[in-house]
Length: 553
Picture 1 (cartoon, rainbow, N blue to C red):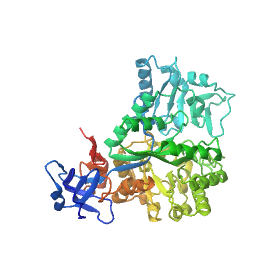
Picture 2 (cartoon, helix red, strand yellow; picture 1 turned 180 degrees about the vertical axis):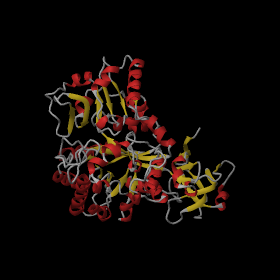
Picture 3 (cartoon, helix red, strand yellow; picture 1 turned 180 degrees about the horizontal axis):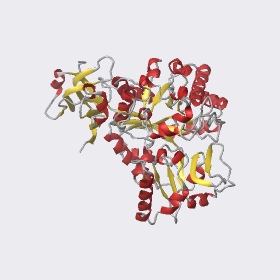
Picture 4 (cartoon, rainbow, N blue to C red; picture 1 turned 120 degrees about the vertical axis):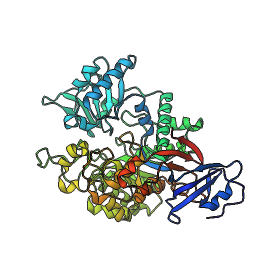
């Protein structure tokens, strides 16, 4: 045990259970002492010597203590707002959606727009619901419902009319209006086309935004998340800028998490916005909230064929199509922008899902390294659904971190019906290559992308280890099982790896003397049970700076 300074007893001692420190110098202990929000001792029975008459003692009783989870890619305010609106994220049934939407509309007769969202593409043929179905349950008001990945939206005829969208409306350059055989809009908007309607939806009030953020913070703490990177700080499509809510929460002493804000890169503009981003970084960075990152969305998603691919998607008959997806930022310009952002000390957080987008992002990082030298920028690529094998070693070589959404690496209807048939066998096997990235020496971080998917790190860790969804029927095959990682690696990605990406590794991410007491108590030690039961693990308590921010009821 490192001897603590002689300042008296600890404020908090957690003892009597396994402590998985995620600290390479000492991976396991049984007791931790905290004073003034910092860890002052890690060890065994000797730590109890720091117990005084006012020390709170938590008996772990064999339960596992971990450093707090950190979500490296999440959208808390949007998730919290959706939970208070017409929330569709807990089922994948079209009829259930329509019943819930109709009920919500009847219960909220004074709401001008019916919004919320979270529906799943696999609930509808081809992932494309219709305005006609919505019209049957809400004929009198516009409806705007983003799907769970927020790369598309389902709207009714009133919403299309409000936006002036008809058969003559051209597709935006970064999106698509789904149409019937006669060219009429069907009610499904993809990517940039979402904004055609989304821009008309009234913004939530400042108090509603704050309530959404605090609702989300409580959910994240309940899953053991003590810090995160908000993947869009700015105005995007129908998403309001969460920055004012964060500042209000700070001013009122309500923000208990540590947050890095990724400032949104407006892809309709160019390098002229960099000066504004520099000013915004200075304006927003204080206390528990820092805004030293810029988020660039380089492509869309595979399910609607907007993820940028090196070769075309296949058609339903297995033939080669004429569509390779969309690179939202021209690759040459992307290299220039990232080089300049890197020179200004920004971290760049890429949305890079298809193999072409991944390569374009890595090329941009390489250009920045060549021009500016190796800096402590810690650029990272999120999603990484399809990675060409040639690009795997570039992560380590360039110091680019792999920001994994582990929960997605499993067989499910959206994967099996809307993705694999259109990628082909070879490219389909390049999906979510966690094991290959680890073996190539990449730094692994992890995030949920909530509300796109569950914010529960333990569900995601289960998939990383098993490559099978916790909800999958018995007998479901593992999704490219050679890409599994071990439990320790998955936990490290969700703790130390994300702390590294967040530039918080000096104070968080592991349990070590001198670090902040951001801690999570689980209801069991998943290292001692079968891997198939990891997802059954629950969070009992969450601490930030040694202060309890969640207790399971």
